[in-house]
Image (cartoon, rainbow, N blue to C red; front, top):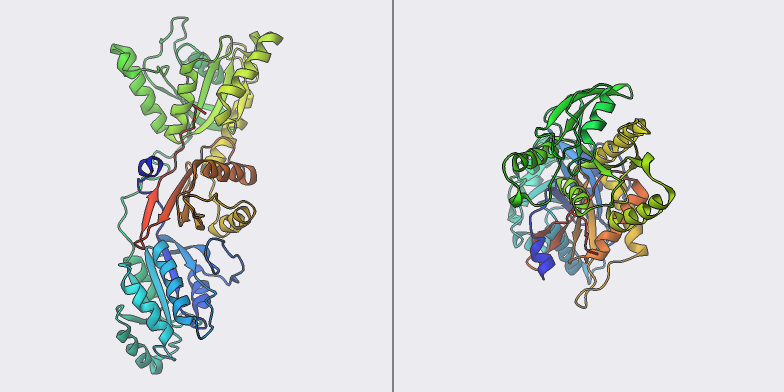
Length: 464
């Protein structure tokens, strides 16, 4: 499918560790030990035949998502098949499998059934020999070498014995990932880019905010050639404003200073955390205005819409302008909007609360447990549509990162664009995210038992 192939880029997400094992081997105790608190397994995440619960966890500064695969059926006739199916589900969504066995019982038929599946997955398996409370029981753990999935780590989930060595092995098995950039490489004041097409009043607004003439203002479009950084105190705190040269739509048609000004504008967006897009409302919204907003969203920065020269409008122009905004900027209806006048200072004080709201949303992280509890209710009420005769299931979700918020859905099939937009809309309705783009990706379980990443986009669908 074109949409699937276009979305095949690997999504950045924390490693996933699936805890598997038959009932009564101490999986829940081990999960509670790893996450550092007692938490009953009550949040069933829909999408598989049995309970699947995801938690945020960390060890020695390594963060990961821990998935508890509880609730195996224990009927004698269906035991082997059920165990194998659960192990397969875990292998298809996980980066590392934590296989828990009761060392005091030894190897059972159920353990052998899950082992056969795990060996065929090509996933790293870390074997936890649980209920080894002292040295006398360590000999019981040695028998588990016969499972053929590697070294058994003798532990006691109840008392914490040996869990450090076990987690060291789990972290060591994580797949290599590219070194992530710091979320705030520069530090210091929050960084704001003033962007917009040429001659909409960006420099005038910067001077108004600063209370003095810090940059050149002229009626000739394109006066500002460089991205100028200014430290300005507003609302009791210091902000770094980046006044940029106007973004022009067609890069290739630009020459000389205008071309380099456009390049510098793009660089300013890269350095900023939030962008204030300024538009001149004395003229109809132009294609360039839409392109500027689109570029900000594509950059993943928080967004504030500022409509300049609002005090010059009569009632008729305001009526038609509202229609233009509703029609052409409907895809960024989540962005805070401020109607200002850079020349007179009208309502410029409202920029700071709008910027703060956008940055707060941009920084937001939703705990994995809360996210999956919410997702369970959402999918139960509105399941994904059937595709190709099959209904894709959402196994669980996690937030891979913030700045902007990036959510990854682990699924058994491709989710249509309309359903992903529905999930995004409900995320905004229930969690806010005013002023921040949201990125939604999928990890699709392929038929070979692996994961196929499908990357969502922060780019709005402007044509629809």
